[in-house]
Image (tube, rainbow, N blue to C red):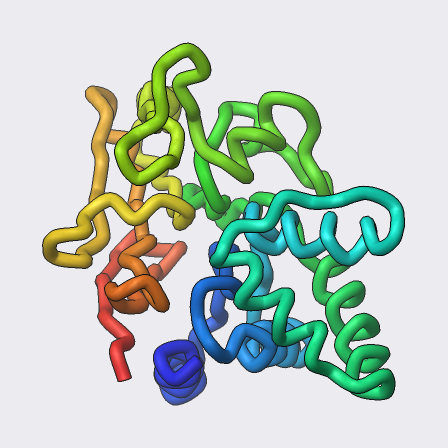
Length: 231
């Protein structure tokens, strides 16, 4: 929450619009404050929310009460416990804000030659205006490109593939979160294909031992700068 607040203050000082790349909840100790900060900025037309797989899981949990069990990770449980601790009045206010936040979010958004999504991009996303994607596109947006046949990594997560990077058009850029790639230095990773298409992997492990990173983009000139928002 402190790092998000620093990022918001920086954006407001510099008249920048914020795109949250998803997974602003889970892992940390102030998940509902993080959610509220992101939501308030969306309500004030200062930000857009990309719906990540962690938001999706909490949505499924909220919708499953008394119907069926949802498998929750320790990361999910950090948010669930905060929700369960709310009294009835605060829970109703939370649910109202949550559903509004969900309905105003998308799985991807394009601005000129820049595409923002959570896990991975497909060619279809460059032309999509859908609130939620379908089929393979939806799974790619939430979870990235995953090797279905191989064993999981030592950390329990599936093997990620990056073949989709080759579909990024020349002189275009995709910005994603989702997967913390550089765990040694906690720096964003940039991948480039043979045609000059780029992917900025911005997850640097905030609330998991890393920090929060931001990409400052001028979508008119395509100039960009990476900035750390560690409080």
